[in-house]
Image 1 (cartoon, one colour):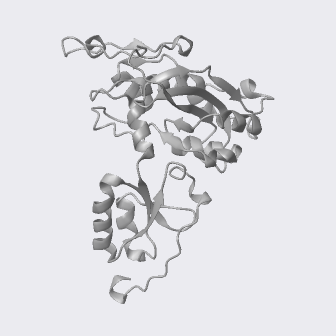
Image 2 (cartoon, one colour):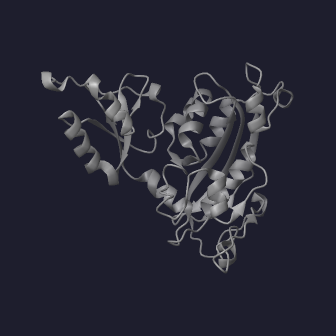
Length: 303
């Protein structure tokens, strides 16, 4: 096995925790209980010069193809492919501190969108730890990724239910009994993520199995169509976000569907606009989809 699942990783006496350095990906070995190949997944990590996909640019990309079986065991890890890119503006000092990437390192470097698209098309799906971030930045450079299924290791896994605390990748990796001495470079983060995905949880299923199940489960986008202005702060408190298209919306999973409909009806007096969202659409940027236009007569006392 490549990840520690023995009592030593958790501490024999219940008072200590032993962390193991992650294994180099080139030494990856499939678990003895692995089944036949089921899917090929592109594990992706980006380093960027900021958070806004419409303004900031990709500095570095790393992609590793993994092959998994139906139970989420990682059978094979291909060599990580990396690339650097010089942005159109100098890298800010705080970004340099976070990523370790300098203007000198990226000088004259350029990513080729067509080559990235061709490589990713050999996979059945893309996976990132924070798919909303990585997909939206990557889609600005490689539009073809918008046609692929996406799995989010952060949002598609119920970490709390699995006994984990928090949702930061490095912290989760340590709770799984592992550490990576280097971080915030794309290839290192890909290696950490693959080891985290292979970790066997207390229910004897891998994190990859949970991520795949969460990604393939049904979700819906609840659009607060014709929301009375006075109720905007109520929906914001509930987790609805204001999209560029001028509508408050929220991603709702199956377990929360009925309670969310009931809450919205109690607040607004009618159902929201409900749009099914699959794993191709789930982490799409707001500016790439159109809200459903719905004309609803609002009685005066609810305006």
